[in-house]
Image (cartoon, rainbow, N blue to C red; front, side):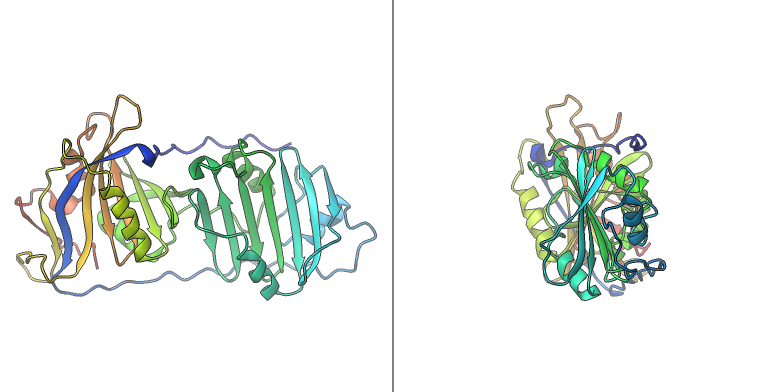
Length: 363
């Protein structure tokens, strides 16, 4: 039987209850030095001797034989499976499809004629809806969906594949209330060759987090529409959420949504202008005519709890990313102003109105 799932990570408060405390007059501008980014390469997927091309078995639904033919996908892909049936009516490009039963889910195992057939089928599964978590390359893919974050009646999903093996696994919970954490834990027990992502993957987001001194990050299902990834991080004991969008336009739409919740009775009073310059003692120029790198907002969450939390938000347009730090007990409860030195260590001790980003955290 499956092992008990690990404790669920801290749940983020719903954004539907957030009320913006006020738009900061703060912007990020580039005044010199340019912007330089680096990219991460994808490690090659581990390869195992395939058994997908073995002679056709006498009983294709025998669990021991299934585990052997799909050993590329997992050490024991049939762990927890009670029975499998062969799907007779399959689309072009599929050489075998099995539908297997789990105690609270179904598992579909597919072997394709070619890697191109697998990649074409993959696109029908992957998306960036709210509640997704994914790690996708041309070689392999992992995709999960958490209906708790997504706010839908759709069931939890885990999908993974390996192009070199031309095989995929697709697990769907039997009911919408079956937790994604339980489903992903059951899949993890099989020893999949492609596992759930555990850390940030977006190169520019990684660079931004490093520059801000934010670490100890773990991937979680997304909370924003159009996000390609979301992470729960930590800085000085504060919860920090960091996410990347697929395009700049999606980030800007999210920013507009945040600004639309502005309330004048809760105003964030920060007014510093942040710039990046190679000058020894630069003076940040007027924003007029300069490239705006991003904006900083402060708001207070209103989720029906007494300990309303202040939140300080930074986005970076070219990155397509944002970072939020949430107040904790004693600091930032109901007051985003108190969180400014937490999110921006470079501003500690800075003169009001101007701060110099000499650390190069926007490079």
